Length: 391
Image 1 (tube, rainbow, N blue to C red):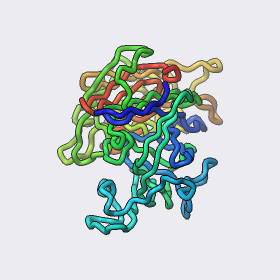
Image 2 (image 1 turned 180 degrees about the vertical axis):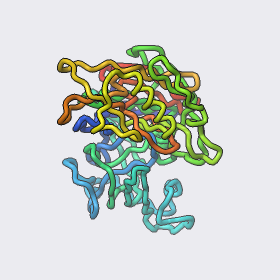
Image 3 (image 1 turned 120 degrees about the vertical axis):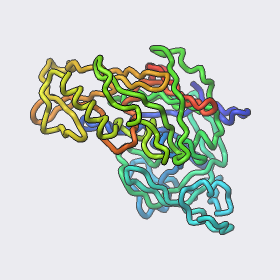
Image 4 (image 1 turned 30 degrees about the vertical axis):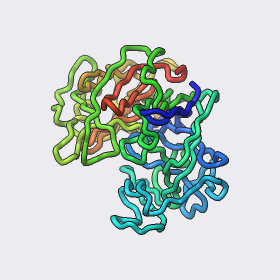
């Protein structure tokens, strides 16, 4: 689909190419990268597509503390449209932490510090630039001026997917959907073990499922006023095989103090469940999979793997895994919750779910070949199985 720029009551619409990040050592904890260009003339960047945060940032020169990438840092001095934002800029007020604090320091540069749940952090200055969105099939592009983004000068953390930064698609005011003022956006991730591209669509028509492989299902987005970045869902339960597990709905529910709950996060690899829920899933798979647990790669608190010996390229049978949301059911295909690799002892198959704290996170591994639409007006999330490389 050609990227196109539309000006209407629903904002400015565009599309961009998305690639799966590197997949190594049989561990599916990777990211999806959205390809954009920043500046005039355009300089390419590749950013983690993250629905769990709102800041858009990339590494910039000069870069005292940066992670090494084949695609070097953005050079603002080479752009005729680069503009450093001062503290007096209203967009600076949308940062969780900035050098401006609660005071209007006039023309002082708006310096930010932005931290992530995995401990990663970026520090730099907030700027405005022209962004170029190019369609995945190369048939068109859209140019949008004056989008706010972070020039990251000090960047530390877990960056392993060839990214130069992160593109926030969350609810916050600094995210791409918010700045473009679109009614909706959608993504359709190809297999994380492959290299085929797909697209992220911003503000394009919501009837996107002509090539879908099933019925479109929808579930409400839940508002958490204590966390304005993430998209919360109402997860009701989990089925393994034919057994609905005895997990209280309160395990996945948002608490009155804003903690807990369930989010869908494209910037997290594998789904994480609260300890009590994970233990029930772990025990159900252990009871239903007719294979020995691989103790060398398993942990009762975080990972479950099984040893197997079958003909090459064959995969052992495992029970179904189904997630029950309010008004919708996600019946996961095998490749969205199991992964295989070889170790010194032979072949191993593992459950792509981890144990975590009281926040349930639906990760990108569970979203492969699933067309996911965020309706920001109706506050609904819709999804349907699809061949994402064909959309």
